[in-house]
Length: 171
Image 1: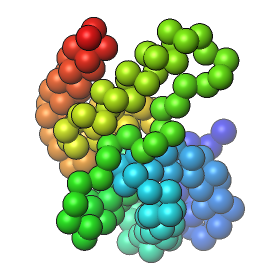
Image 2: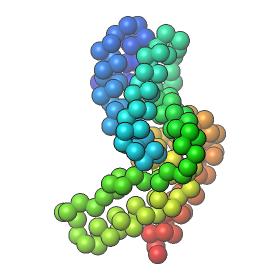
Image 3: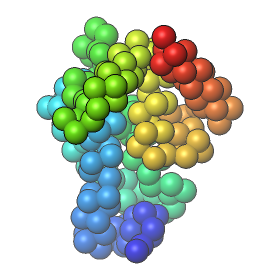
Image 4: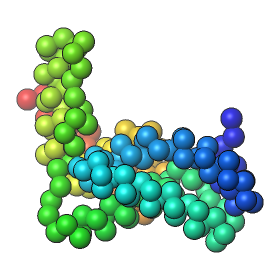
């Protein structure tokens, strides 16, 4: 399996099949991140398309990308910030259905899942973003690249996130 960076290099060389492979790899995790941040599936789809169009626009300008995942999530992060600023209102952090208990879970597990979803809704935006990036499988370094924050800030926010969720779940 080709690495994301190798696929991006192939795309820069004109291989559109490499773009299709990148789209297949990142469509679902990026859409989940965008939907959770924006709270609206239609807006998330728009921003998703914008992020992938950015790959096509940037392929001629970039010779090397350290982490395609971090770069793509960074593009999406900035697009989300622009959308949220344009709305001039607060958006719920966890979209309805983002964390939904399944019918095969015990009542206790369903309650714990609802409790977690409520805890995520109460998180400050900065911590919710860290949660969603980490839940999408990103490393701390990639999260720092995507948010343009120092690695130490990402680590401290992650520590604060874990502390807050632990407190919430203990209630």
